[in-house]
Each structure stands twice: as C-alpha cells, then as structure tokens.
Image 1 (tube, rainbow, N blue to C red):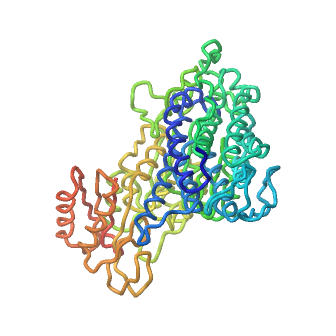
Image 2 (cartoon, rainbow, N blue to C red; image 1 turned 180 degrees about the vertical axis):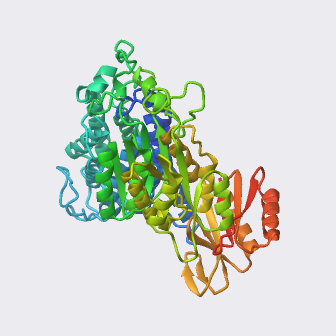
Length: 609
C-alpha cells in the first residue's frame, strides 16, 4: 500500500536501496568504464548507501533509547542519511550520490514538512504555492512530519542542482544526466508522492538507456553508465518504499557479448582513457578525504585540485566536506587539503594494473589501496618498469628526545620541538637540505604544524626537491608511517603506503589540566587528568593510569590490533606495565609496544592500529 514520505519511509528506502545495490553490485562493477575502468562503482555505491542506512538506523535507535522514548522526525532522518552518505562516500559515483542525498535532505528537512518552500532552491515546474497541510494531487493531505508530492519534486531538483555544482567539469551521459532526468520526470508528474517517485524512477531509467549515445566510451564498450545505473537502482528503492510496489525492472547491466570493448594495439581498451582522451590512460591515483574547512577555503581548494587532475568532486557543506579527485601527485592533493583545513580519513588508491585490465573489458574489482611493489612484476604508476632507486629521506617533527632517537633509528631526520616553541618552516627546510635527498616526505605529527610543513614542502620543490606532506596529527601516526616506509619503491607508492598506515592509526594523549576549564567532557579542574582522543577531550579523571585504562577501553571498543604507548618524561615504568597488563587481560589478541618518548608536555601518547 502507498506510504507517506516520512521518517519510516526514508528508513525503508535506505533498506530497499541497499538490498538492490547488493544484488546489482557485481553487475555495476562490470560495466564501470568511466571515468576510470577500475571496476568498483557498484561496490562504492553500496558502501555509500550502507553508511547512509547505518546513520538512519542510529537516529532511530538514539531516539528509542532516550528518556522520552521518542521517534525521529523526517528532518532528523534525512539529515542523518545525508551525513552518513557524506562521511562514508566512496569513489566518484558514491561522492556524487552523497551530494544528491544532501540536496534532497536540504528540502525535505527544511521546507517540505512545514509546507514552506525555501526561496531560490531551483525548483522546477512542479512548484506551486500551497498552504501547509494542503492535500496533494492524489487527494490526501500529508501527515505531520511528512513531505508531500511537491516537496519530493523540489527535493529531486535541488539534488540535481547541487550535484552539478559539486563536479568541477560536468560530463553528460553520466549519473548527473540521470539525476536531472529524474527531477524532470518528477516535475511533469501529477498525483501523490508515490506517483512522483515512480515518475522520477521512469525518467531516470529512460535517461540511463540513452547514456551510450552521449558518451563515446560507453558506446564503444556497449554499456550504460555505471553510476547512472546505481542511481536508478536507488530511486527504484524510493519508488517501492512509497508505493508498496516494485518498479519496472532494469535491463541487465552486463556488457553485451556481441559488442565487446575494442582493444587498442597497446592493450588498453576505451575505458582506460580519461574524459579528455589523454593517451597516457589518465592519472594514476584516486585521492579521497574528509575535510573540515570553511566555504572560502574550499573554493580555493577546488581551483587547486582542478589544476592537479580530473574527476574532481567536492561535496558537503557546513564545515564538513568530502573531497574526491584523480591525480598523478597524490601528495600534492593531500597538501592542498592541509592548506584548506583539516583533512582526515585519507584514502589513496593506485589504479595501476586494475585500470588496464578493466579497459580490456574485464573490470572485476578496484585496485589496491596500497600498492605492493615488491611482488614479482611490479610496475611504476605509468605501467613501465620501476625507475632506478632515488635518494629519499623522511623528515619528522617530534616532541621528545626519545622519539627523536627512535625516528633516527628508523632512518628519519628528526626535528625536535620545545614546549611552546613549534618549529618554523625555515627549520623544516633546513632539515630537508641536510638530508641532501632528491625526494623528501615530511611528517608534521601535529595538526598545528600542517601549514608549516606545507610551506616547507613548497620551498623544497622550488629548490628542485620532490616533496610530499603526510598529514599526521600525532607522533604515533608518524611512527606508523615510518614503519612502512620503503625507499626501494617509487615515491608515490611510498607516500600511499605511509599515508594509509598513518590514517589507520587512531591516537590519544593524556595531559594534566593547568586550570579550571570547559571541555567536551565537562568542566575540569586544575590537576585533573584529561584523556584526549583524536584531539578532543573525551574523559576527565583524577589518576593518570586509571584514566589511561579508560581511554584504551573506549578506543579498543571499536577494534584494534596493536597498542603503542609513548611514555613522557618522568612517567614511571610501573604505569606502562599496568597498562600492558590491562590490555593483555581485557582485550584479546591485542599486542602492546612501549617507547620511551621523553616528551615534556604529554605524560602519555597512545596509538591504536
């Protein structure tokens, strides 16, 4: 039976869309030839919707667990859905889908339920001036906390408009074209909200069938656009959630056997070519990260990343963004994020052999997040034999003599910091010069030093040194990056591996409060022990070891295989022994390693890998 567009319908939509993408995932992966034939579009869309669905479930569970045992509103749920998609977006199509969901949430949360359309939202022909609670064309008034047919029309139009704005160089014949067709289909439709959802689905399905005629790479491969196919699948879930009926089935997604993708003399198929037809097969790396930054900084970031590569999509807003780009210089793309704000959850994927394999008509799975160049037959990012080993160095900023010695033992050049005296970019560039290396990786190991490290890297490049900054925020992330550093592989591969290792390491720090203050965990008094996780105060305690145990328990609750303890100056060995014993007894199969860091300010730094 038909359903109103309320919080329950959104939850049902997410579940149906996730199930449908799960069934179609392999087929969508198989037709992924644009913008890069890396065979992962279906998987990326599934993971994006999975994150959105989990956020919606969390919204329901959070309200159910509240003292009032309330139920979430439509606004609560669509905002949760959009946020979940944003933080979990994968790949080019997943990032665009996250922006589509954000656009829908903007309207459904802020205007539709109240019957007060936001001005200037780009709504189309379906708009009308109707009073709040007015009946839709099907004769039914929307329930309180639900959106009507016109609200869904405006939401789909807003979604398409925002998606186009998010893509630096929009291309027709892609998911963007399908999104516009969905909005246009909804605007032409009469009837209730279910009828509008079905019309959006049919409009998108029709546009999907036309994509090979708009994009040559699709026509040559004999497939429709993979991202567009995924969006039609998601819209089918919406139509089913609102109408109670499964929509007309999509045509099979697999490439037609009678029209295999032609293979060029160099072994590359059409999917290996980027949008501009560059003969080199396009950029070697996909870089994705979440970014905390203001709108002004993001505008400048778009311009910088657009000059570095292609397939640029920047989505989000209100201080949180998801950045996706294909580049040859992965380090420069991450540095651009550092200059704009605070990047985290950095993921770098080397397309490598996966793109060439998919271009030959067999896209099976995405390339590895970290390349393993030491395996037989390994190649550099351009596909040729690896070049002669370059002289490479790592410069790491560390807060203590023990950490400096540890870094030196690992082959890095350490720049020691002094309390209240962070190093200037000149000190870092001096350290780079001392290495006499042609390639340098910088580990700032502190959020406040990211801009300083970026400035030093820029100066190093001006002096002919290839330099990259890995945005480490703590010494334990720097230790993790150094542990996988391998000068024998290519520079980009080394940066990818080190960035992945650092990003997989959560960090915490214990400090002693100097005065009364407000924190995220409440009011602390002078002398209290503060347990800071990922830079925010999460716990306030009275005794260091007990607070450290509580921090470890909280961090390991979400998983972990290795605990790193970096002891500050003067911290008794008994504390480390107590913490090692606690981890061994309370957390199965988790190893612990202890270093004497000697840092003067933080009694203890914790890393979880």
